[in-house]
Image: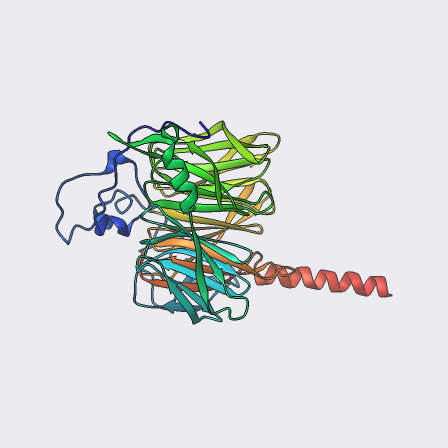
Length: 434
């Protein structure tokens, strides 16, 4: 349903501080109003914490310095070429969101602050009054942040001084909101016995995704809708009542498709159509429907592949060849997958078990290269930038509920494989020269 949708009433999250520690919304059927003692934290009470282990010998505790282990576990260190470069720590809140551009790393936390890091040192920061920072995306000179209170803030970096960021607005714009509030036909039901204008989120903005080619920003929310914004003028073009429970992830994909994942256990594909100056998104396919909450989605930049992390610890993936087909499920974690990232031929998955699994896609197969350990809390978010395209070398940032960000160098190929390939190139060049 697009345009001005009629949404069904939904149950509002409790808002308890402890419940926010896992912050990726589970299905409402998992919530309990029973009082809990401090010892029984939501993390310890969660079924994510009590799942059987798929990784033999892995205790999940990690260490302060970080190690690299084989996906089969056992605790052995593997010479994979991946290394821990450093840790960024500022004792002010759990890390929920990351974004990187041009050597600058933006981190969002439950302190309401957005911190900016450069060369692994704090560069600057700015504060929002809009609550916990759940999502960050960057479009050219603008930074968009999604918040727990349902607001999307827009920030701009000063062209003269990159350490200065000023708020450039809020989505929706105040004038659009006021104008929409006048017309009764613009109101939809957002809770039982409560209506509100359709163009504003009325629960946490849990995820953001950009389609820079089309100039569009997508926002997903715990209010079960996703909205489409035109970046050029910050207008809300469309609101889609997408799921029966909270949306935890949204990603702009390939072949004109948008993918949304929800606590209702489904992954849905939506087809985008451009209509004049607006858009229309129609439901194309439901890719997954199960009892576990969908927590994270990512699309590969080098192949039409969609990855989906869920609270059962699995990463499902689909491949596109004129249509989407299920490629399989990757088992690398013994607790919920909270974030996934696709970079080159690699896919990384961060988990509540405090580890990051590194997978390499080889055709239709995925090989687990290593498991990165070192965080002492659930890994909540991942971001990355290319360090050396020719060498397949990436810088990966992992944010955790242990209040730290770790910086990793990750290679698509093992050093030995890279050395053999280089030797073959040298030998081929020598033969041509002779």
